[in-house]
Image 1: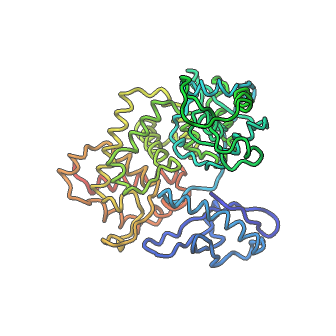
Image 2: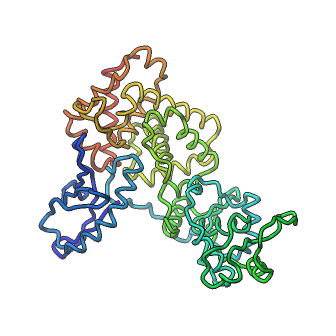
Image 3: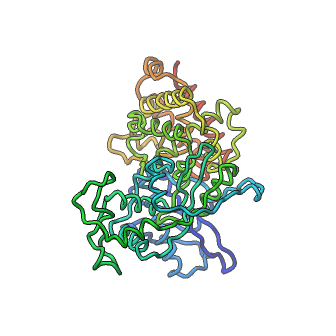
Amino acid sequence: MAIELRINNEEDILLTPIKKSEIGDSKNIYELIDEKNFSWMALELINNSFEIINRNSEISDSDEIIQIKLDNLVLEVIEAEQSGTENTESTIVEEASPYDPDKIKVHSKQFNVKLIAEMIDNEDIDFTPDFQRHFVWDSHQKSRLIESILLRIPLPMFYLAEDEEGRITVVDGLQRLTTIKDFMDNKFPLKGLQYLDDTCNGRYYSDKNKDGSPNGKNGIDAKYFRWFNMTQFSVNVIDPTSPAKVKYDIFRRINTGGKPLNNQEIRNCLASKSLRETLNRMVNLPEFKSATDGSIKSTRMDDQEIALRFILFSKLYYDDNLLNNYNGYMDSSLDDITEKLNKISVPESDVLVHSFSNAMRNAEYLFGRKHAFRKIAVKDIQPHSYKQLLNKALFVCCSVLLSKYEPTIIEENNPYLSLLNPLAHKIEQDLRLLNYLSYGTNGKANLQYAFTEIESLIKTHLKF
């Protein structure tokens, strides 16, 4: 989430909107900062629109151009805030590891519409990724797609990915395939057609059930029924022998849906069923929802992404020598751990879920559900104070470090909210920690310092 502005008519600079760190401030003030944390513009979010408070004189874009860019940016900012987490991550583009282009294998095929429906029914095509439940096409969009097929207008290319076990996931075209399958299952009638309104409006796919019995619905005419079933789709299939990084790269490049998938939704497509089930178990724990006060939304899989961060940094911190093997690139690291855990066993899954449960119970007990994983100031520890957005860096550090302690031991030896005041004082007094929790929080140095300071806080103030 960033915006490009022209500087002195010579170059574009990429800026990130960061909410000002004054906690408890009722105003929605943002600063546009560059990768060196230099502020170029201050904005106030009022009625879902950005108003400029001040701007650097070196910005040479016209007021009109700036406002257009800000109007586009505000939608992303609002969506990010609705996810329940702070936007504190760097605008630096991650550098993909180089790979041999000859290893990219994509096969072009022709699939018949009936064959695709059968593959979905037989679960040869995986429609189970969680983002599927957010399918949002309305009835008119669905009907217009079916009308295009009935008019024999070629549809854009579909992209599928096949794994080593023959499981196929949809890279591009999920909404189209879902609409086609729903129509063939008689789940909606056609409406609002442009060319076939007289002959097909109000009609369903068929007037018969799959066993041939009548269903009481008015199906499309036999001519259109034959044309529909004879439809051939052009499909590109990513071969499972393509290296993992190549598959993620291809997925991101060709993902062009009405609302393109974000990084975690893409991982969800390429993850194994066992890993998806593990993440689902974690984010559906009552203790996770309670410790985060229901702040982390599932709409764009923000909850599963933060659970995956817990897994990643648990392994980096305890198994890989205190983050020394972390390269500072969050998305590629999350891609890598997704691949490594594609064959996760039931015992390993159980251990991760148990550790995550420990972390959530301990965090709520030691910080309170309103303040756990959030940057807080001493003055804000009041019953009616403003609740901060969840900070991902604090979530990672606190959850990983608290996961190794059994909650019963913590509760027996420490009073309720033991770490709330110590953390608030630490954030106020340690400006380096506050800065590291506020800007570029995915950086290796930032996370190493935060881990060190939070671990010191735990050892100083808790009894075991």
